[in-house]
Amino acid sequence: MKIGIEAQRIFRSNKHGMDYVVLQEILQLQQMDHQNEYYVFVKPGPDRCVEDSRKVHVIEIDTPSYPLWEQYALPKAAREIGVDILHCTSNTAPIRCKIPLILTLHDIIFLEPRDKQNKSLYQNMGWLYRRLVVPRILHKCKRIITVSEFEKNNIISKLHIPERRMAMIYNGFNEWFKPVDDVDEVYKRYMPEKGFLFFLGNTDPKKNTERTLVAYSRYLERSEVKRPLLMADLDKDYLNGIISRNHIENIREKIFMPGYIQNKDLPYIYNSAFAFLYTSLRESFGIPLLEAMACGTPVITSNTSSMPEIGGINAILVNPESADEIADMLIKLENDPMFYQEKKEWGMERAELFSWRKTAEQLLDLYQEVYMER
Image (cartoon, rainbow, N blue to C red; front, top):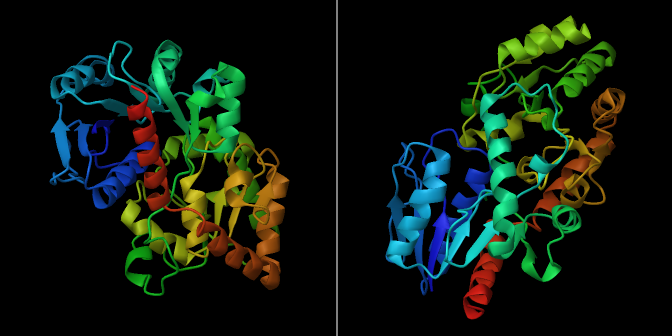
């Protein structure tokens, strides 16, 4: 097979969820499959995280805008190379493309009610682009991959996709997310001491940042330890607005915001943290949940969408819309050593069920299935 994989943004420095997923899939396929030919379509960038090999060829396409890159340059390059299958990995795909398509549709949040408070131009433009493109490509896709049973059922129910055209393939996590002892050199770049709380919030309303910070304020009021909170990549003006609206000035001096945290530093951050807050309102999978559990860090996560499915029956689940429940669970972890140890052990055991190798094996099986149907 000659397989095309769209991976437009993997060469950028500041990668995000979907970028990491396709990157790990490519790296695993490169290691395990020495029979088929892969053509990885990317936009040029500073982080060349995939190199050419005998069976994997990196095709750089330098086109200024995302829509022009995907709708014109990508299908043109794939057609000229003559790929048998084109796998588009980030929710959208070319509208006009005669090559058999496989689409990874991570979620359909863009079809759900929109929070009017989201002022991010980047997020709003992405939301609009997906709303325009996705309904026009679904019927053309040979298979639609999603990343949890929750999201698969959600897509079938709301978009009326026949189940035979759906595929569920779990994400994995990198093997360097594990318990480690030598963390001092890395975590001290971000925090003065170990035992802090960690939260990967941002301005996207689904991340539930505002309510989580209200919960943190209530935790500080009740805790004897009063652990500081590390937050990544959050705008200070946005934080100031949350503090002002909710009258939670007590959190200001306890929050550390170093900006973007490189993925290679995250294992050391998780290992240095007392607990990880993953209190989103909505996730299709939740790789950070797995990463923290694999490091032996207890995770407080939400009882909504895919998070109970990924966290398992013994996950620490809370109502993400209840600041009191989040605060209560932080206090319980702090005051109940046996409960803390149980959740630490459960997380490490649960994480063993997931791996990028398993993800890539299932993906290769799907490629072969679609190829045989041509």
